[in-house]
Length: 239
Length: 208
Image (cartoon, rainbow over all chains, first blue to last red; front, side, top):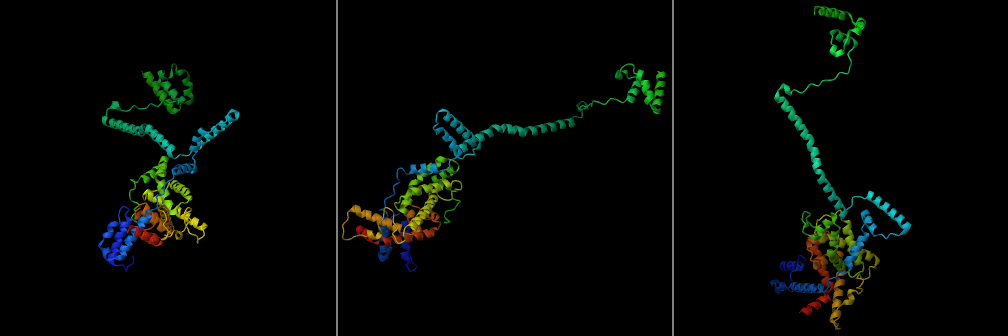
């Protein structure tokens, strides 16, 4: 539509274009448009467009051949990259030869199948969904254990804190924690044994402690020890 | 690309989009539904654009193979039919160019089953052909006239006229604007009126 086209013609042709664009619209009512009474050009255009619509409507709708969808699907299945899982599933459809050769081939097929299974990537499609479902079930089963694992250390810590709190609040001697008694593996020195013997602790070191200790004392006691012995001797005499 | 087709639009109600997303998620049967539902549409568009050529079956196959290949990267940014029209348009244009490179440029570029040129189908005033033959001539003339349109005009007209596609969606198919599509369709109709002038006159005369 050129700029020189009168405004009324432009308006009419805009209406015509809108009617042609709308698949449900009809051109016939436009024939009664007031503008056409005074504009043979627009009238001729409308007639041509109506005739063109009729011509375009003569083209029959292309009919889809009955077998095309089946052909397309079959060819697409052939050309679609075959997954290892598909290859595995096809093993069931193989015709197995009989006899020794057949059994050998069976073994080879089984080996191949096992190798495929070990190398099978995460499959897409149905098998992928099955695996996802199994995984979600596994997670559901593991969930209580995981929760226990997470909760147990926290509970133990809380109990320990509670125990310490109670101990701090009680102030009762009976509640004092027992003092650990460390066993002494180290045997007392000969000098110490001699002193203990002199002290007469028979309950600890057995009977007749004096028989051997005199020699020991003579060999090892220093001056201070001798003074102690003298003191002890005097005390003994006093008793 | 038309701005009227915002990527933010929700196409969840479009069955084609739903099937494609299901197929993308791993549902192989959704792809079968796509083929069953849209084969007819693809076939019609190819037939109207290319004429009755044997290659159409291969192109239908190729169109759906492209759907398969687009499985991973598909995003619903338009109606599924619009997305598929775009695939078909690209395939059809490739086929046209391939064929053009094989056929001499001065030969008429008709369908394989439509070897006649429009010039041979001019309306004869003197003869009184049977209604059937007359109708066949009209159909052939209309086909040839559509075939002679430039590719973008042809696709715009076919989608608008025979597939009831809104201009905004045609704009997505042709990677253009709605305004440009309005202009394309207008020029396509002008070209058709010019080429089919004798038939239009008879049509008007018959209607009068």
